[in-house]
Image (cartoon, rainbow, N blue to C red):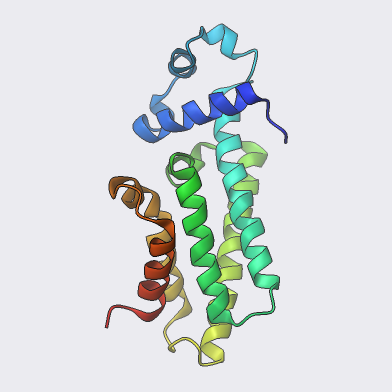
Length: 189
């Protein structure tokens, strides 16, 4: 969906508020105040606070889904695919850290088809990642560890990266990619 410049501004400011206070604690009035307008005027641009959350969460989920689909279909080794997935997470985190808070913390407030769509995208994403890991284990590129443990270890780090990254003063993204890939794939010993 193509968003107007004003709607993009509203979504951006709301994402910062959602990150600071959590979705449930933010009102439409809070968002309007952040925009310098009355709540009634905000409704000229959005239908609801739920619409803002849907835009934030589903757009990012689509970015991840399209990214892993591209990686999955590429003609490279499973290990190289995992490297690219880690780099995908880093790129999305660096460019969308406030929206990632909504994706990680507030997705459960989605309703109806939006919630169903998000859960499906997340499950498909994890299944694609799991298949890549299993293929890497089968080919001997990855140590024979349980794929669920590998998946959990990598994703739990990547899903909280937005918190760490903002506190560290914007570490150079190339250094971050190189070192995170090395640590997540080769460990520290």
